Length: 227
Image (cartoon, rainbow, N blue to C red; front, side, top):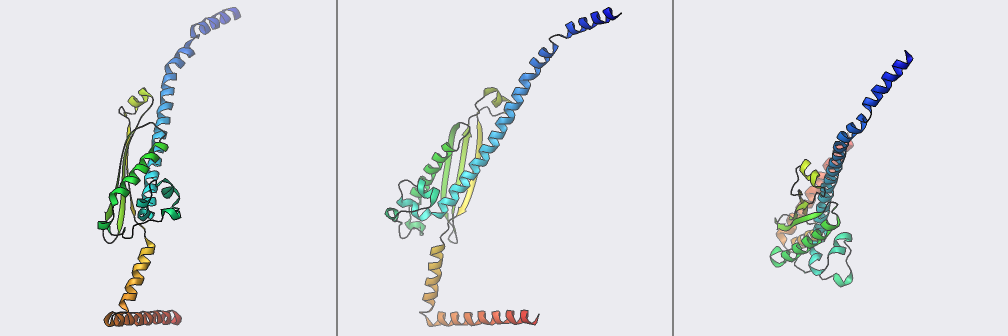
């Protein structure tokens, strides 16, 4: 009886021999493809986040040093640190007046800088890139708009088919930053206040405004003291 059971067990084992290998051979390619697709999706998400961060940073830094860009042949150091050497202190006097400032040269320099940075920050292969930098004067405020359209390569062919990026992955990002010029704002306010003192009418208006301001402060102070 025992001998018959052992014989049947050996027959079953012989029949099942190699079944695991066949199943693994069928499943293993699917597992590999799934892992590769997941890795590529994560890389694409990371690449997009990096691209958006780079464009935002470039727009903000360009807005900070906009008046100094024209006097620099290479703006890399200026954009990264904001530091200016004595030899570079050649900022045009009327750069704030758009009609007298050559904004096209500045825009081109920022575009070239951003194209170089795009190559440095590319994890996927950079296939092509389009960069646009526009300086807009709205009188009340000035703004820099940076637009970037980048096409990246997907290195593994069958992954391109699976995630439907046959021609590569295209990312488009935009950033807007206001040109910051706090020093000029302070100078303009001081100039207006000094000019008001030169004319009797504006001087009286200024005096009346200051008196009214003092009265309002006293009223507010009295109100809180009663409380």
